[in-house]
Length: 114
Picture 1 (cartoon, rainbow, N blue to C red):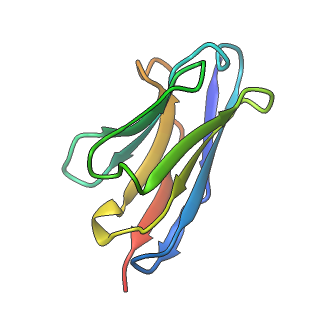
Picture 2: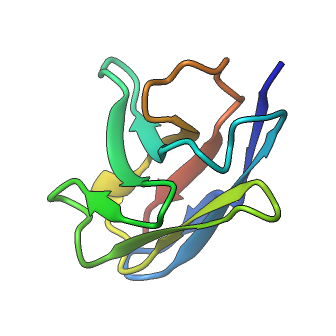
């Protein structure tokens, strides 16, 4: 059974940076399109970035140019480098394959506030 463990969140001020990590246990990581999602209370979980098995990346418009997704298949880990953070980036961040077919992890809270 695949398990997802996210880490790296925290409380930062606007304009600062964070790097999130997600380690995936179990098989299937290297050939899966991976994605970072975020969710705020009362809203649907949304995809913010995704990376294909060959490394092609896509971003939602609100984070394009500020966030960068990457992966290390040898470590079964996907990363999200978040720069120039804004208060509207505040959310719980999760990773999963793009189809969200694995059980969700606990997520990692990102709070951007002055």
